[in-house]
Image 1: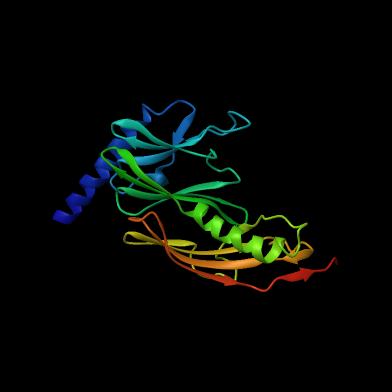
Image 2: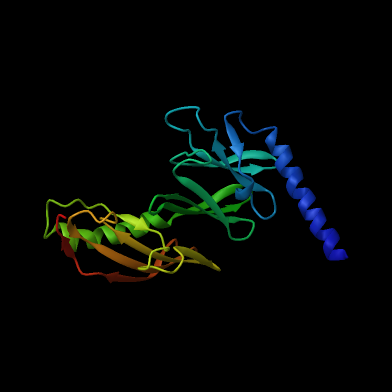
Length: 221
């Protein structure tokens, strides 16, 4: 019975914070309840759809008292082609990432303390640099007409059945499959799988393992 009353109190506090913040949210924004932290203190605002051709940034905010903590680019409304997702690891750490078409297009972890962002980790940015170095060494050096571009492909594919990232205490484990031509376009085809561990205390990858798949050349059909 005590646990029941405690859960009811937490739920009441959660909705109280959300309702209180709703009155202070800018009129061009809306709060997605699915992004609210477990204790109801923080959440992510989305620009309302149809306001501008280029949406303003999403906002990581403190709900009670209301305060903007960080801007998140690119800004996307709810229900847009690109999804913005917030995954909380306890009440003061959140991974915010964009997901579009094939897979992740950004992954940043925000640490919160004293009602502010104390540290930001651009994990996908660091992973991109590792993979860009490999594509440069193995693909564009041999095929200079190819571009040093690739996309991250979701773990729903057979090549990478593990989740793209997962919290492990003060570490973030990533499993990122990258492909320069996931649409099966003709020409040189490069792909690689990065398994790595990001240390939140050190702010860097402390373990990396890059599986390099052989480069093949697809012909025109």
